[in-house]
Image (cartoon, rainbow, N blue to C red; front, side, top):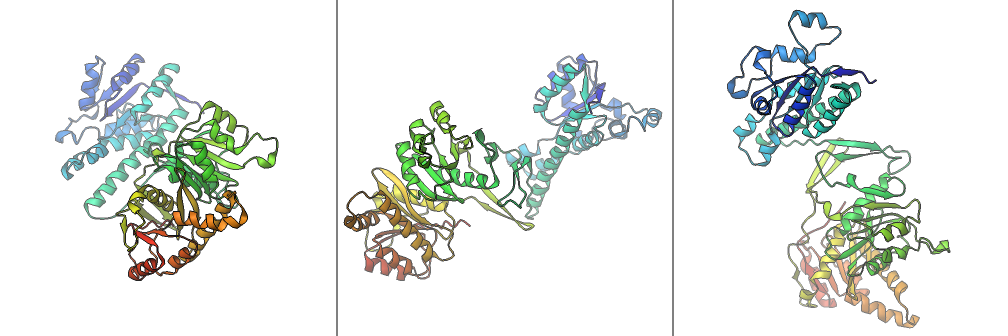
Length: 539
C-alpha cells in the first residue's frame, strides 16, 4: 500500500529545536498550516514563517507554567478521529484534522545525566507530548508523527518528491518509532522513580534484530539484537567478506575481542568454544600470530582469531590459504581486526567462506553485564579490576618486581578463560605467550593438570634438539614460566603438582582459610607465590 495523504495541517511542539525552522519552511512551501506552542512557536516566527498559536485551536490559554498546553478535546480529537467513519461527527464538532505531529519530549534523560535534583526531574516529565505522539501514532492511517530530528531530512525529501504528501509505508514506520520513543521515555522515568523510592528495577530495549540460521544447535532458534542508544556495540561489527555469522560465531567473536582489548602491545587471540586456547603479545604481528597459534595448534582448527592492530599481509600469509597443497592450509572460521591493509584483505579472500570482520577491540567498553536466566535477570559490573596488589607472600622472592608485565599478561588471559581456570604463561624472546591453560573444570586440580599437559605438548612441538635433551629444556621453560589461578587454592595439592613439573612461580588471589599452609608448602618446595587480592571467576 502506498496511499498518500496531503499534509495540510501540522502541529509542532519540540524541546530539541534542531532543524525545526528548516522543516517548518518546507511545510509552509506546500501551504501547510502550522500550529505550535510556546518556545517552538517563537522559533518558527523568528524565521518569518506563519504559525498559529495553539490556544486558538484549544480555546484555552497555555497555563500553569506550561504544564497545560496541548492537552485538550480539540487537539486529541483532531489527531484521533477516523477520517472516513467519523468525518460528519468531526465536522459537527468543528474539529479540523491535524495530519502531522512533530514532537520530541522534555529532556528528562539529559537533566538526569546532568545530576538534576528531584524537583527538576519531575518538571521534565512530559505529559502532553506523549499524549499527542501516541494519538497520532494510533491513527497513523491518516496522521504522520515525527519524534526525532534525525528523521527530518527523510521527511523533507519525501514531501518534496510527493508534492507535500506522505506515503502509508512512511507513516507506518514512523508510528512504530513513535511508540518505541514513548516506551523508552516512560521506562527511564519509571526506573528513575523506582530508584528514588529505593526499589530495584531494570528496563532495557533492543532493536534491529535479525534471525540467525539457528542457535547453538540446529534445533534451536536464535536472533541477534542491538541495544538501543548504544554505539560501537558487537552488533556494529563490519563484515567485509564471507558467510553470515552464526550464533556460536558471535559468542566466540565476543570472546576473541575481549581477549585482546586490554593489551597495549600487538596482541592476537585464538578462540575455541569461547576460551582463548592461544594468546600472545609482542612487537611483531606475524610472530605474535605464530606464537598464539602454537598455544594449541590442534584446537586452532576452525578457530576464531582476533587482533588489536591493523592486519598486514606478512601476518596472514601464515595461514597459507593459497598453498597448492591443501593439507597445508590452515582452516579458520573468522578473523577480526581494527583494520586491514589492502594486500592482507585480498589474501584472506582466497578463502571464499572466511568471515573477515572489521572492529576495534577498544570499542568494547561496557560497564555492566546482563545475563537472563529463566525469567530472571542477573546484572553485574564488568570485570575491570586486574589486581589490587602484587604481594610476594613466600620467603622465596624470584625478583617479581621485574616480572610485572608478564604477570599482567597472564591475568588478562585468566580473565577470559572459563572457571575453574589455570593459565601458564611465559616470556620468550620479548614476547608474552599463553603456554597452556585448563578451562571450565569443576576441580581446580584437574585444571592445573590440563594446563601443565598442554604446556608440555607445546614445548615438545617447538623443541628442535635431540630427544634426550628435551627434559632439560622442558624444566628450564617451566621454571621460567608463571602459573596463575583465577581463584585461591583451597589445598596445597595444586602447588605440589606444579612443583613436580618445574613450576617455581605461582600467582593467585589468596583469601583461603588455608593460605598459611599453602604458603608453607611453597617455601618448602622453593616456589615464589604472589597474591593479587582479586579473583577472576568467569562462568
